Image (cartoon, rainbow, N blue to C red):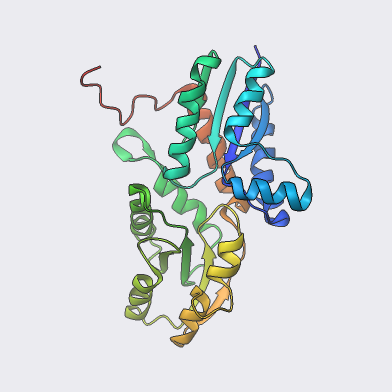
Length: 274
């Protein structure tokens, strides 16, 4: 039986951070699932086009990758998103899963980093995430995490994550998104209330790509760094994506195992009317 894993991320055109994050996670997955063939897909068609035109690097869309798995005679495919939240991109990947279910004996999908907050059911992605991020924060340091944000209702994940950080004793961690609540203005109010005079900017994203380098740490007046400095707050920059964190990489491996074993298959589903 031929079995494949499709690692799906938004993608990045920054070669160095791609190597340290996406490729590092793919390598860890290959180490843990030797009986599977591991392939890559990006959901950003813009990045796919840019890599092809600029670097002659070919990356499949999820649809193209699934077509190739089918053409190559695979029986099982597990799709593992490298996204943080179950937002628009995750919905897109789920749509692809449903589209190709009749082309294979089995098609499964792993969950993103933040999905379940169900302590009573024995699974709490948020606390696991907090403990993983905690390992890259110096004790006592103030940190502003920059998330992406989304118009999708899953944007609520960011505020929940900030609360969990605080519940885990990390009251010095603040959250702000590039697009969506909480905004940098919301985070700035909390930072001022705590009389913070120095803070480290850190991407709450898989890769330290364009958003991290420009929206977070750029020199334009509307970057997070410039906004904070204009308020007299000293800033430091931690230019590393979450994908570089080995504990985060291990979480993706666990989510894949959960998907393959259908560990939480019925959790959160309404069985009424079925």
